[in-house]
Amino acid sequence: MQNRITKSNIYKFFGSLFLLFLFCCYTASSQNYDKNRAETLYRYQCSKCHRNTGKGIKYVYPPLKNSDYIRKETTVELLRGMIYGRSGVIVVNGESYNGVMTTEIDLALSDNDIALILTYVLNEMNGISKVVEAREVQTAKKAGKLPVKK
Image 1: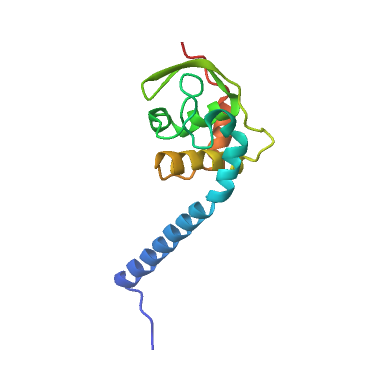
Image 2 (image 1 turned 30 degrees about the vertical axis):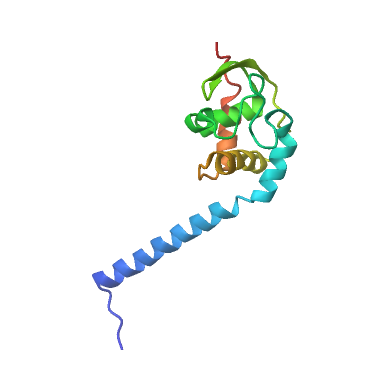
């Protein structure tokens, strides 16, 4: 019996290949998010100021949970704040915060762990389904410290 190459067979082959590619990408992304590890890292790195709940302390430390600031900033900008800290005025949920955020992120953490912390804040505290990638952390590190907002 002879196998013939037909247009239909080619479409089936490439369609199957594409579905396999999508499955592999989805699996790789979802494996990068370990919620328990992310929560542990968040509690150790961020909860001193932003609290375990992510609600912060009004007028002192802005909330990370249900935060319009988190929703509207880019991932790289949020990472830059985490890595290098920030100073100046920011408005979160209509409240002004004017202080200095000296970063508590341990720079000995891997890029994957830093990404995992932000993934936790996005997913668990803001309902944003996104897995932050280590390459985004590297981009943020290259971009450097945020300018002071006045």
